[in-house]
Amino acid sequence: MRTLFKTLGLLFAALCGAALLTAASKPAPAPAKADWNSRVVRTPLDSHLLGNPDAPVKLVEYISYTCPHCAHFEQESDAQLRIGFIAPGKGSIEVRSFVRDPIDLTVALLTHCGPASKFFGNHSAFLRHQTTWMAPLASLTEAQKARWSNPDFGARTRAIASDLGLYSLMEARGYDRPAIDRCLGDKALAERLAQHTKEASEKDFVTGTPSFLLNGLPLSGTYSWDALKPQVEARLR
Image 1 (cartoon, rainbow, N blue to C red):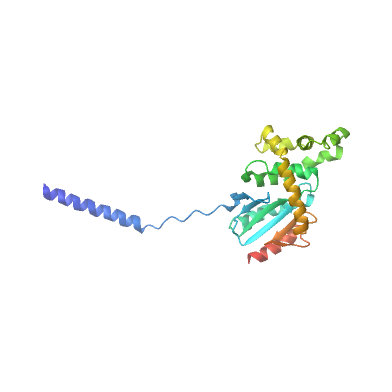
Image 2 (spheres, rainbow, N blue to C red):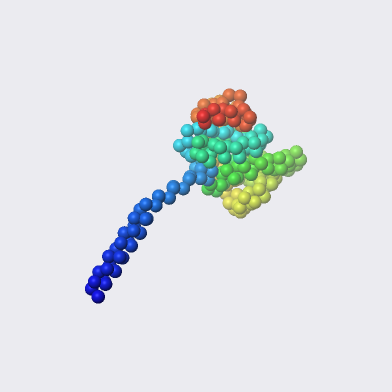
């Protein structure tokens, strides 16, 4: 009996050793690839950066939400930049608001609404539906214009949002009215965005939108995806 137990023990030890050897010989699973298209951080400049923050190519985009060229750029460039530039971690995009008027400011407040992860969805929604929410501008009544001049900051931005149908757009994005109103009333952010706009004009020579910096250098005469694309591709080589 003792011999039987000894034999079984040796057999068990051999089997365990074989199992450990097999496990050790298996290659370690490959680390999961970073999904850079879901990596968004809010910067100290109240801008939002999409992609690998350590990417070798860094694109900064100054936009105004009432700018038709900005809407056109978004539609032409977004998919291409996300697939070939952001996804592999080769580049990052930082979007900065360039506030030209009270409508720009109102929309910018709404794009900043909620966590940083919501920004690029908000940003895209406003640019892709720009012609829809700007359409009422052609038929504003005198009463509406008066509301847009209300000295109370929150009342003014809420009036603009209401008259242009911006509440509906934000509700379709999952926001409720109290949350929207809180964002529209963020006067401190509005003042910072206005200051950042002033600094962009003075330091980065931004005079119109869209305007771009590539690795910190202003791109003169570049206002479209057709003009920007070869410059980005040259940095990626």
